[in-house]
Image 1 (cartoon, rainbow, N blue to C red):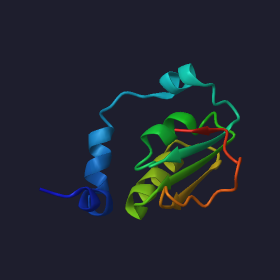
Image 2 (image 1 turned 135 degrees about the horizontal axis):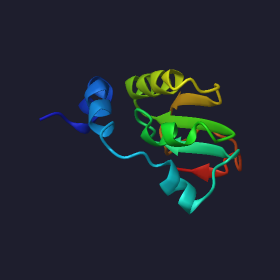
Image 3 (image 1 turned 45 degrees about the vertical axis):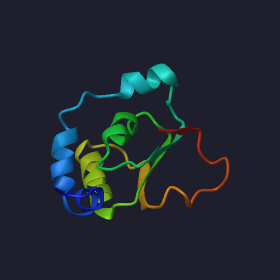
Length: 108
């Protein structure tokens, strides 16, 4: 059986196929907080399930994950949606985020 690290580093395409079957979440997130024009951070963004839900309406979007292959798929997914480039994908450990204090309005 594959470990979490193996899945996130070596099986990002399989992970994406698995989560692509899950429902779209923009309305669920908007029900918690309207993210229109906000600076949004997607922690553990993976292949972009939440990022793709908020990217169109967010003012800016920073997508962080420890797995570069996952973020590569996220980037391809958002580009494939034809969105204006308002996002960045950053390999980062969530214990030490490369962000300025008070630079984010909403974290998902």
